[in-house]
Length: 175
Ligand SMILES: Cc1cc2nc3c(=O)[nH]c(=O)nc-3n(C[C@H](O)[C@H](O)[C@H](O)COP(=O)(O)O)c2cc1C
Picture 1: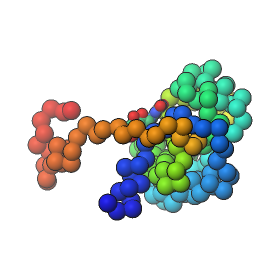
Picture 2 (picture 1 turned 30 degrees about the vertical axis):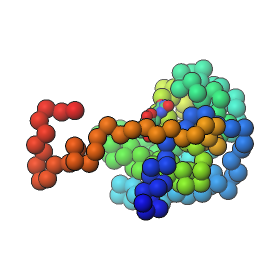
Picture 3 (picture 1 turned 180 degrees about the vertical axis):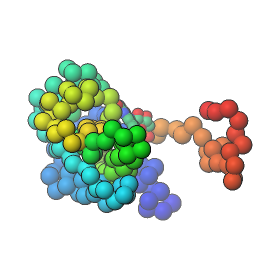
């Protein structure tokens, strides 16, 4: 197995963390991994809010986010340039996704547990809580912490041969 394969397979969504706090230099390493991701038109229009204030986790949980956030101590909120135009909107969301995946892989390499969270309060509520300018969209939150349990294997639904077609899609009606 190559080094990259090992990192890819080790990465799992981790939602329970120990009390140990991740140092700021590791947080910065994770953000730096995001900065090296590809972005549409090389826009690099991301911003990151590092969250360590417990009252903010309580606020977003009360406002309707995923429940496990109430017990989080550290997270990074990923923002990306706001666009309402359809094409640019999807380009920007895809770019933010590439940034987030790079950050998750870096966390995995550092033995830090992370979870990609989209189940967040409405954007206008997020803007208010985190003082986000109208020029950025809060795209996703990445929760972080040292894993409290062994990483569970989450089986994949398909093998490569079940989802791969050559030259034309010949798979019929859908999944
Ligand atoms: C776009 C996106 C949004 C997600 N949102 C949430 C979420 O709101 N809450 C959560 O607990 N997990 C969330 N996840 C994590 C998925 O549940 C997880 O990746 C999936 O169950 C596969 O498990 P694995 O990451 O351990 O391989 C999200 C993942 C993605 C890609």
